[in-house]
Image (cartoon, rainbow, N blue to C red):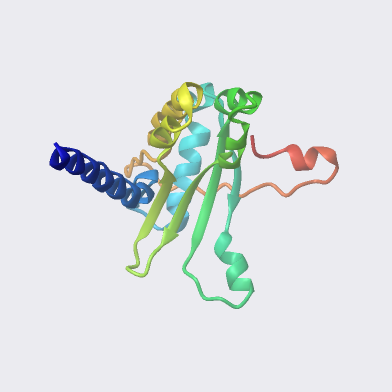
Length: 184
């Protein structure tokens, strides 16, 4: 009997340890882009902006960031990184209204990272929205499940279409409305 209990406890510990070690790689996804940096960014942006299906679900671009620029300005030498920020008020609204999950606003807007690695390839990184949502109950789980499905449309590429132009962020014009213009 003692052997069975110890075996069970050891099994639980091993499963928990393996889960803990695998969790970081499960929370985020990474895939190679078939295009260069600027074209990958532009194609994702246009997938979001030009899709009637995504528009109907409230998706819009809310920003484009270049986190590598600050490091380069500070004298660092890093490979290119661009982050597309996108949001749907249809999905963010219910979460922002609920006090018990409002802390998840830290994940808003959704970010898509496009970056180059030492191997010379361009990669696309996203949060695994479906898996992440399952950890926070039914409201967030269902919402993030929808986000995960929509993310597939963000990253659907048609190489037969010509490369679009990148959509550069509009400069804030000042005043109280400028700060609220982007984001969710």
